[in-house]
Image 1 (tube, rainbow, N blue to C red):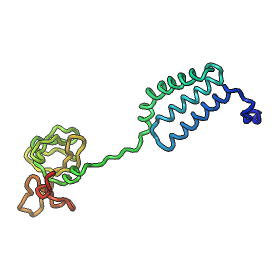
Image 2: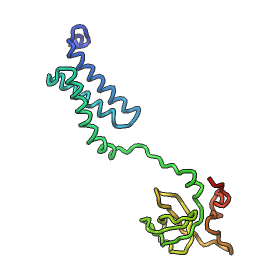
Image 3: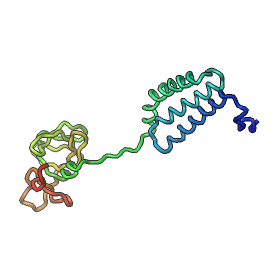
Image 4: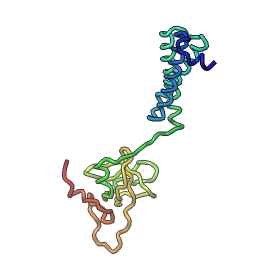
Length: 191
């Protein structure tokens, strides 16, 4: 039986086309291992299903096979891809822009009380007010805070600890002396 399957000369064109659909489907599904886009797996699954329908005799003509494959590809990929992506999260990387990285550690004034879980408070930074949320507790209006990072449009700030033995409190736009290697915003070049 296996010798008959491997003898391509004895096969009719319909069987060869069915095997080509099956091979293409397996290659597409296998290629998903090299780039996890979750697109080729659905295209491959549609090709394997098309090969199955050809083998069962439901689809015979080559143009009908392409039509079935296209419909199955769309029918599988559109509803299932977002569902599968939700359960198989891909690699996500968050990269701060240079401006955000340079601003981290800068001392700012709290314009409206800043709380932990929601960006309902506001801070003054670079001559403008920005939405902000706190890393710990509540920071009252008029207090000072240090920029930690930016989450979309809101700055995440931490309360400024009391400076031990220091009579001079850094002015707005200056960097906290405890921050390592950060420059003051007044020494930065305008872009």
